[in-house]
Image 1 (cartoon, one colour):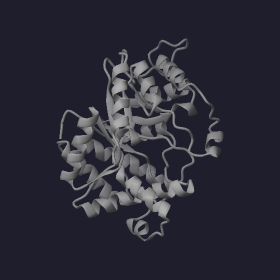
Image 2: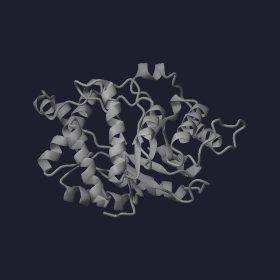
Image 3: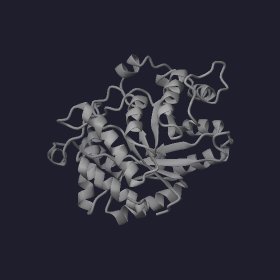
Length: 331
C-alpha cells in the first residue's frame, strides 16, 4: 500500500442494542486512543441529530473528550453541518477546542439536512447559503472578519468540505480540500460520474492561503477479517441497519450478526441490504489491500477515511489494527 497516503478513521458513535447511548460515546473515545497507538494520522467524528442509531450529535463536545484521551493524533469533524449553526458559534467552538489540542484540530464542514422533518424543524433549518456561510466562517478563523474571534485559535484551523455534487464546486471556488464518499466513489457501481466530478474539482480549483492545490480524501466503510465469510459477518449489522432505514425511515442501533441473519426481510429490504453491502470494502487483508489500492489510484486521493462499524467492538478493533498494518503503520 502507498505509504504516502494518510490514514484516518471516522467514528459515528453508533449505538448498539442493549447499550446506553453513553456507551457509544465512550467507545468513540476509546477507539480514538487506540487509533493513536496504531499510528493513524487522524480521527474524525460526525454530527447527527435525532437518530436512534447514532449518539454523536455534538462534534465539538465529543472532540474535547477525544483530545483529552490522546496526545498527538489529529482530530476533526467530518463533519459539522453548517446549515444547523451560526458560523461565529462554530468558529468559537473549534477555536476553544484548539486551546486544548493546539495544532491538531481540523474542521470538516457539510450541509446535509436533518434526518427527518421534525429534526429539521427543531434545528430551525432554513435554505441558507452554504458557500457564504463557509466564507464567513473562514473570515472568523483568519481574523479578517469585522469582529474578532475569542478565544483566538491556537495555530491554524484547516477547513475541509464534505463534498457531494455542488459542494465540490464550492470547495474549488474557495480553494479548500474535500472529503468525498458514497456514490461519488463508484464502489459497487459505475465510477465514471465520480471521476468526472473530481476532475472538474481539480480543474476549477483556485489556490487559497490554506491550500495551494487540489486535495481529495475518500471516505467509505472498510472492514477486515481473516476470511471472506467473517468479513461478511462484520459488515452485516451496518448494512442491515441501512436496509431497515430505507424501508422504515428509522436508522436503528446496531444488532448482533445473529439478529441480522435471522431477521425476516422483504424483497425490498433484501435489495437494500445487498446495495449497502456492495458499497463497503470488506474481506481478508490481501483482498482489501487490492481494492483500496485500486480506489486510491483511481481517485488520486491523498487520504483514506475509513468509516467502518459493526456490533462486535473487539472485532472492530481487530479490523482497525489490520488496516493500520496494511498501511505500514508501526504498532
